[in-house]
Length: 147
Image (tube, rainbow, N blue to C red; front, top):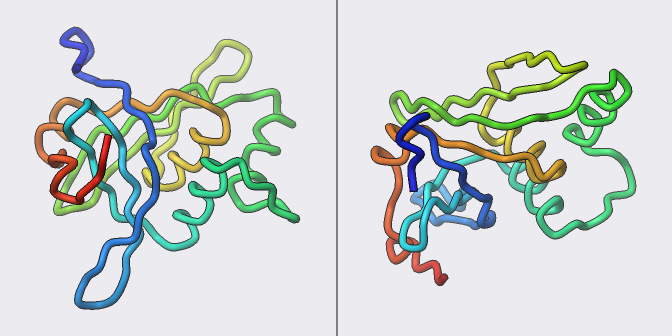
């Protein structure tokens, strides 16, 4: 349900899947925004791997790029406060990463895939604008995803 005061809905990362296309397979991350719809976002293979390993809590022998960024943030006494996906233009999603340090918030333009990889690692909330949800959400049946 969309919060009518803010125009944003909290979603969860449902998983990473491979979609077939004429060019081959493409990874998609799915965000669940209610029981019957998902928000599919096409992402790169490296980001898909990073999100999936975080979702499955699989240890990796060396830090991945997202792990490195989190280590830097922690070293600077900062934390990921939230991820906001708030725009869609010509099939490209736009996100903002909100970082908190000493009670101050800093906002950074970021790709949704990188933001989601960080959010999954930190259990940070992810919010999507009502406009994006209305424009890009699809029925779970479209991708044959179960509840």
